[in-house]
Amino acid sequence: MDDAAKPTALVIMGPSGVGKSTTAELIAARLGWPFAEADEFHPKANIEKMTNGVPLNDEDRAPWLASIRDWISREAKHGASTVLTCSALKRSYRDVLRQADARVRCVALEADPDLVSTRLDKRKGHYMPKSLLQSQFADFQPLQPDEDGITVPVIAPPDEVVRTILAKLGLGA
Image (cartoon, rainbow, N blue to C red; front, side):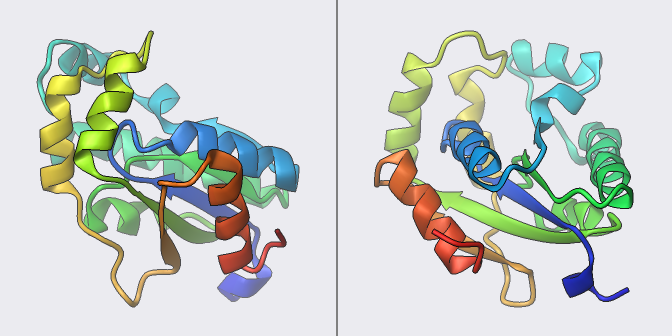
């Protein structure tokens, strides 16, 4: 089955604090698609590392990415298109997600690191400390022309960002 005939998984991606959760939840609500927060797929050891200010490495992320990929495939097997958040900072991470049995389309949210830092100052109840933000921006690899996805700046209000995303993806506005 070619990708166009498969259910779609929209991966709302970028460093912590760019607005992935807000954007993904709004898109999922507008499209009526199941939503998942990638943070919920982290094993306890990863959460402990991040809580202690230790950046995750590729080895830490491997089982996390595999579990997200497998969730996408399970949903697609039942015919469900999905929306999920995932930092997906590196091309190699996105390559793992694209192994899912779905059309994986990435939406990279782009924001100035100073804006993101200000947002993280206001965020409550998240285990990732602001001190790890620099490592996330350092690891981030922009989408490449051969990747199925778009990049959207998040300087506008969330509803406008979502309208832009849906229009660019041809999913309505």
